[in-house]
Every structure is written in C-alpha cells, then in structure tokens.
Length: 174
Image 1 (cartoon, one colour):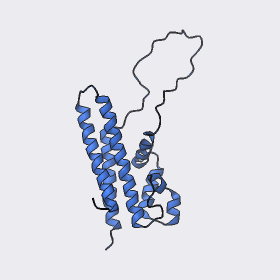
Image 2: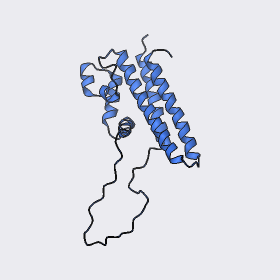
Image 3: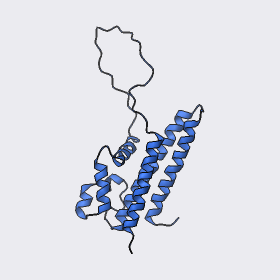
Image 4: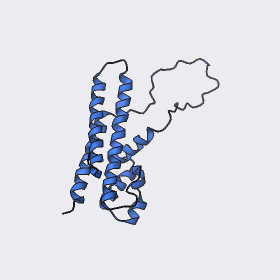
C-alpha cells in the first residue's frame, strides 16, 4: 500500500462498505446469532466510518502542514482552536458540521463515542409506596433507542466519500 494519506481514507471507506454489505446479509439471515451479527457489523461499519473521517482530517491537515496533523482522534482536529491558527476552508466546513448536533457528522462522532461507554441499565423512577409489591411488567425493551439502520450508515458513507472527492479536487496543486 502506498504511504499517501488519501489511501487510508479510501481504505476505510471501502471497509465500511464491506461491513455494510455484511450487515445487509445479517439482516436477511435467520441464524440463532443474528442479533449478535447485526450489532457486530453495525459497530464495524461505524468504526470504519470514523476511521475514514479521521483519515480525511489527516489528509487536510497534512496538505496544510498543520502541527496537529498526526492527531489520533478527529475531535482533536475539528475544533475552533485549530481554525484560529490557520484558516482552512475544508476544515472550517467540517468543524461547522461537527458543531451542529443534528448533522450527520456530529451524529457519526457521537455514535462512535458511544461505542466506548459501558452498558447502562435504564433508569426507573421511584414508584408510589402504596402500589402493590407484585406488578406485571413487559419484557420488551420499549425505551431503548433505535439502533442505527443500514440506510443511515450508508448515507454517512456516501457523504464522507463525496466530501473526500470534493476536497481532493480543491486540494490538488496544479
């Protein structure tokens, strides 16, 4: 593999595509371990999408020779402090998207960060002490947040791919 910065971004985008393909196959499967496969492939896709984002940040930072060009996390590059040192239009666009909580980029970063949190039991409000001690409960987890679906992850992948292509066109020296 060439040691150019763009190769890592391309590789991660490709790997995310492979994980999304496997996720699609796992969604169609009826195997006993289907829930585990779904979670594993979803997490793999998210891992590679974040890696592609980090790779894209490294490409931009390397092109402009930023001192933070070797940052191990995208969040370290997507800050106003980095922009204060040198105005970089590509990085400014990424920072702006990262700061908008509803943007696909902010959601990607947030979802990736959640991978490193320990599982948490849902909080239950204290009940009325006058209620009977034995209560009927539902075993369905109604409060769980919906998992990222394949279409949304694929959308993020296409967004990253489009940004990479657009930025590379602007970054290339004539």
